[in-house]
Amino acid sequence: DTGVSQNPRHKITKRGQNVTFRCDPISEHNRLYWYRQTLGQGPEFLTYFQNEAQLEKSRLLSDRFSAERPKGSFSTLEIQRTEQGDSAMYLCASSLMGGLNTEAFFGQGTRLTVV
Amino acid sequence: AQKITQTQPGMFVQEKEAVTLDCTYDTSDPSYGLFWYKQPSSGEMIFLIYQGSYDQQNATEGRYSLNFQKARKSANLVISASQLGDSAMYFCAMRGSLGGADGLTFGKGTHLIIQP
Image (cartoon, rainbow over all chains, first blue to last red):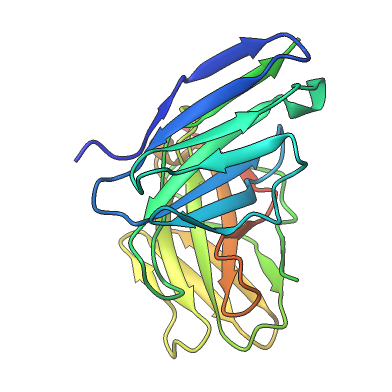
């Protein structure tokens, strides 16, 4: 078990470009979450999947943000037409299905810089 | 809506001393869970401890304990016998039983620095 893996670890892009990040969860985990963390803040919940179903996406920051988990394994987060305000750390987490006490395991994140 | 407040942006503590990190929360959910995570400079969030809103006893995990005062809506983390490796950002978070979204709501964090 290698934990939650995120790629790339760092991404620098020009404003207006599209970017895509990948998250590979712990293999037996059926829930997968995306968070955004800006400097000096705690992570902010964006969306989550249970298997391949996206059960919550109202927290995505704008229609430029989208996420997929096509086969219920890895997930991608895409940001279209990036803006400087999108610069942040994007964290992925996974967990088993469970109750309030279910622990989420986080990856090391993808740090996005929009120039 | 849920809200977590951490009022200590940064703390300096001498090695081997105990330290308390403050967390207050607000929610209308009848049941909820409270979490503490540690985030070292590498960026990964590391789970430390969990407290359920209906748990009768305060949670403990090794050197970590949670001082849960439900009436005051506080869930402070206590680290006993601090070590240099405890230097990191610490986040309080919660998950409620209502509202649909299953993600955690985090506070802004406390930057803890342990001094030798």
